[in-house]
Length: 175
Image 1 (tube, helix red, strand yellow):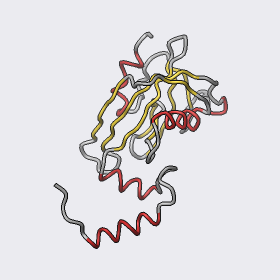
Image 2 (cartoon, helix red, strand yellow):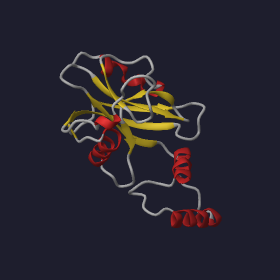
Image 3 (cartoon, one colour):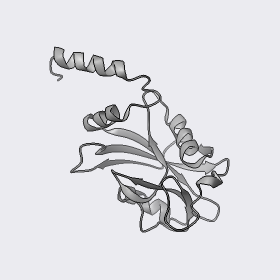
Image 4 (cartoon, one colour):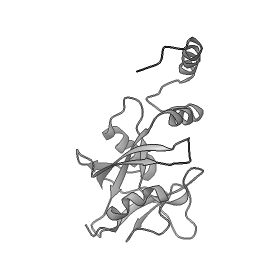
């Protein structure tokens, strides 16, 4: 059962909504972090393998997950389809276009027990196929990876971000 409406909270919510230009595009960071403290976030992850059995991963270094390789992915926006988000992630993280099946390979729930911001996710893993090559300007060229670089991996890297350990079986599979 829902508690009765609190007029002060209703006014604060109305003021907050006035500041959000277009939730279909995304939220201002402070609003996004507030939302992530109140409800689970839904995201899509793209499992991309080539004909040599390698997996395409991108480097991430942020305050929530630290540095490491991860499966490209993104949070679904308000009234955005999974298909649209999958395409947007491929273009934003790889500079490429992808094709994907109608159903996810896996659905996972991740809860970070001690973190309030960005602490609860429902993730949908999709097998994707590249339709265009990833942007060569974003390709990892050796040394220390930079945020946003991509690289083909023969096996699951040791420095996979911890939250993506759930995908280790997919990254270690031979198919």
